[in-house]
Image (cartoon, rainbow, N blue to C red; front, side, top):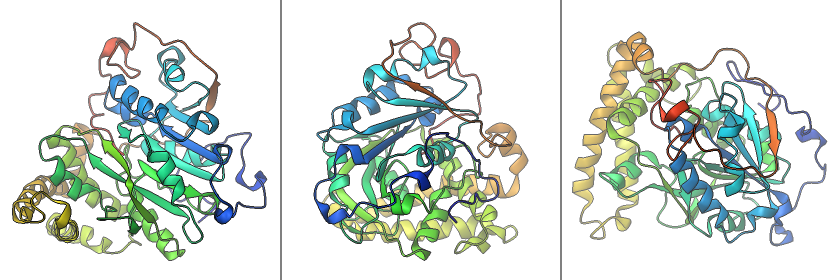
Length: 388
């Protein structure tokens, strides 16, 4: 798996950072507190651009700048699409002085993650997303979980407060446990790993712009390698709550799409059953979410007395995901024309260009709410709702 890209996976060359050229002697996690010089923090900018919001990106960066752990002494990478003018991304360096901006041609969510894995110099790589806010002790708590036997740490991501936010968190954040413990899930927006893992994995980046399903595939590969994630319940983060309808349709659609493109994973056969595929896949995810709600019932309002109400609201959410799954299974061409969820740019992503140092914020093209779109308008109507 390491060193050889899967079909459809982009290759990005970065001149000065080949993992095999890093120190041969890897750090022993038992050596005590982790030095900032051993840490790389990678922040993708794709979600904020896809959501058309500089404001959301600013909130994320400010939450990272306010960390109790000395982020300024870490290697900080921010990956943005090469189509965003340098003048329109210069403000990022005012929020996080000393960060490196990597510009990636034809960026998608998981292409950005894979580039960060190639560029990371630290013995520990921590992923953050541009549409997620992090608690002040988040980074310190994540790094504090590394100990002998722990190579991958997943934080506790929930949706920001809003309509159905608790229900949607139950549906989407599979790693969550009532307290810190081993888990069998993780997500790209709240994740840390050691270099021993970093050198062996890559995310599938051919599944769609936001890459839904790539984590599912990588999860099974890591479990086969004997890597079990540790869930840090105290490392809290709050994900932007995207508009409901298209987000749920897209989530349901990806449940079909990634299973059809990765037949080697468990239960992928369900996505290939004629006519019945949307029902089989959605019922499977519904049962999984019910199991999760039962496991987390003590954390729900009323100490579990509200569980029946949440089971009903989960079924309501899954009905929209069923519609998305049916659209992708039965009308994939229409979905591609209407939404473009799976239109990954063909060919290899270009070599990144690096921007270093401080920059002045650009006014005008970006304004208060833009993210690389001229005059604050969307240039591609299909690109909606952030992906991580």
